[in-house]
Figure 1: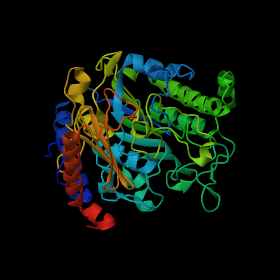
Figure 2 (figure 1 turned 180 degrees about the vertical axis):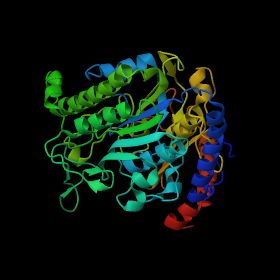
Figure 3 (figure 1 turned 135 degrees about the vertical axis):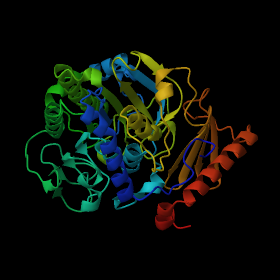
Length: 454
């Protein structure tokens, strides 16, 4: 294991072998219980909700007074809110790939194609333990049959595989030519005129009701507030008082997202499953200022940066964890936490083994149990396009290429406005060396060599 706590080896056993081993282990574990007629304690359900392009501080519980998010605010009040939570990359596909595998994205992505077929997702891990698995929303980890949700551990899928769709026609209009993009399992699906966030929420509620007797993993990657920024018209009236039109449109999308989350929470309450369900909410990265986002509207104050950057506004996101009776209500965790830690954490809570898998994340169980716990990693690392970043303690190094290097103290300067490279040369060199060590470890990985050279 490396000094930052991550796996040095990027060479897990083959996916086929791991899945067969996990299935055999799960059957062996279940058999004595079934033969003896004993009642096992119910394993927790997992609901993983991902927002799309949500700003770093764009929830009421994170200080956004102009955004109506009562359901997510209540979820935070009922659980634990993270103030320094980081995703693995400032863009959709890379961030989601790491979230679902617990691995750094250069190890696991073939850019332009999708998730490496050999990778094992959280859905596969939990399905091997008898969980029902469903995804309703945005996949964006590949469009071919070998990288579909069904091939990566999901029993049910309703949603789209590309980066964005129109919420009513369900067409993808960006890039080269419009095309229908709504899928149900492995077939194209027609539901014209049905508002997409409601469509997938309805499917998710049906999935919950259909699996009340069995443990389930529900993955809900919403497409809000990603462009084309089409909020529910009824929700939009609640944001009519916001003067800036871009912020008003964005706020209505966030409010629509909050309404959808509220429906999920109420269904868990109505079915009596809330106490048995771990709920995780986060954004895939910071807010967008892309051309198609129509002026954006998202904010990251006091942070600088947006989607596509390695500044705090691109990679520091809201994150909430709730599990009534297990996680302290109203808790706050201020330690730096990476999204790759959710796979080992949730696998552990669900009694699933990760033996044989090379996972970069570490379990958050100790940190979730105690606000005084040490961070799981000594240092956090990012790479995106030509840029890279390292954080250790309060210090963060942000580099573009090999020579354009900046150093910030996030404790005193969370907005990354004052470059301290010339003032703290020893710190700068230490973080540069950490970055080199991390890149060398990645370079030992077969996938990295195949697609990036070296």
